[in-house]
Length: 259
Ligand SMILES: NC(=O)c1ccc[n+]([C@@H]2O[C@H](COP(=O)([O-])OP(=O)(O)OC[C@H]3O[C@@H](n4cnc5c(N)ncnc54)[C@H](OP(=O)(O)O)[C@@H]3O)[C@@H](O)[C@H]2O)c1
Image 1 (spheres, rainbow, N blue to C red):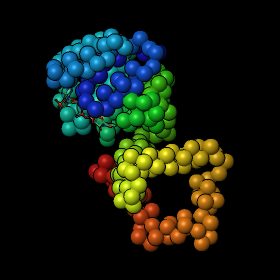
Image 2: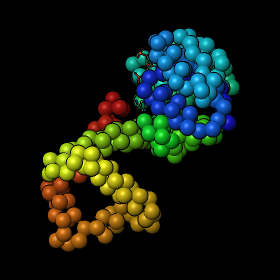
Image 3: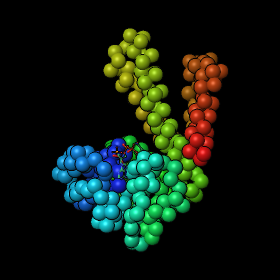
Image 4: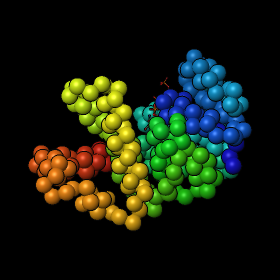
């Protein structure tokens, strides 16, 4: 298992990953690089009881001390973060930067090996689907501590995969808010409304996982009694284009990332 891990960029997603790693029993040694000393001090103080956590304003120092470097800066900061750094051939660079291709990464991190990884915020509770390309056993082993790893078959699928895992995940919160708001407006206590929405989605997810032998549309068919409320409401959703709007939005996000 990789033990010495550098982070370049210690923002939201880095914090979620550190939180997830802290929930596992591993003696990691992190070195965190970021331009903001106050941020570094805060984060290192938070995680120091769980692991060795050094900090630096110098990205090269984080590279030099790590077996694996996790690149977690915003896309428009990536080139500045990597420019002029020197990597070793035995090092791995796991980039979570949305849209950064292996070709582009390779230009900056060669002779180290770049790997694209897409985790989402639920890595903080070790429940994230995590996309990886290309296959790399040490990286897969490490990230499997944070959720369920999926190695994609080729790099072109990484973009639609990112649309689904990254954007669709976020939209679910907007959908939950909309439906919890409506439920509360009907006179149900807002806390209960929130729980009902969460538990209903959890129940649907659990049944979908449990009934592996059935396709999702077969499960839908078992629920949509002719003339019943599920069928009635779904007709309205379809008439208003609500169901088709989801794949349309995924397609639009994919095109945006490819442009
Ligand atoms: N947030 C998510 O849930 C999520 C999920 C999957 C993938 N991602 C990807 O992860 C990346 C980071 O996203 P984020 O939401 O964590 O952004 P963020 O909160 O803004 O974190 C990025 C961090 O990088 C720092 N940084 C900027 N320039 C740097 C440099 N030259 N060297 C080292 N560090 C530098 C930033 O410092 P300053 O704030 O001082 O500029 C900030 O602390 C993005 O590329 C995004 O596509 C994010």
